[in-house]
Image 1 (spheres, rainbow, N blue to C red):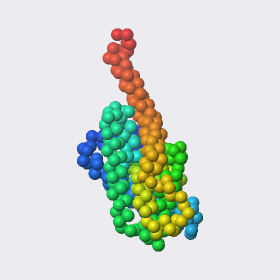
Image 2: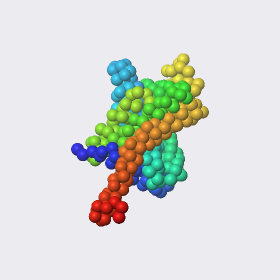
Image 3: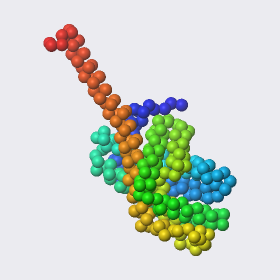
Image 4: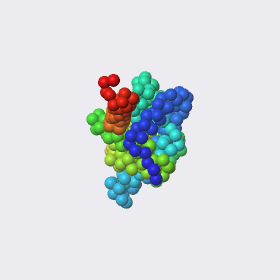
Length: 299
């Protein structure tokens, strides 16, 4: 199994990111909506699988399995071809390499973020209408509300920090999958970092675009609220979602992806290599000139 070296990964992401920034608006929006749906698929799968798992295997192992099944979301994004905001934070590479302008970068992020949100909300309404949350006597719905409620009750610093940690791992997942040349290698590269961020409880902005709106919708179901009697759900609303979770998580995701993966790997493997190549080229030019002048540097 052949893999790309880190310097080749930077080069590949450089070229790929440049093409993403020149995609038509219609294509970009469609692929962004797909990504929101695909991440939502992973989220609802994890919600269903984990709703009673801790009873049998303990909370730690339940989180591990939940993270393992959630990874299907990013697998669909990368293998089927879709545009995910968190992964597109790596477009910072062609931006600092001056292949795309900052305006193009911000335009891509804005369109993809909106498309991801629309795709997530579309799936939320389909899941809500489908009634799959009624599985196991409404316990899947209870789990959905519990997950959403825990997210909107994080402090700004907690959500921000978890956002950094999450997209550090997500972008490493994209990074490693870029090194693989076959489907099996890409799946394995995606699986472990994504499993790790979900297991650790880190925060992903696009996943939360599914988790929290679904919890808000289900909060209006009296049967579910009766089961959760005594649990404070006062913060589970659109305002808390947008300002107490999505905002700090998104900012954290941007920092985790752009700085700790995109910029620093570019600095190590692209900027330094460029400097080495330029020095080598100057040395070759000087040596050639010396040979042309029969060994005389001053001629």
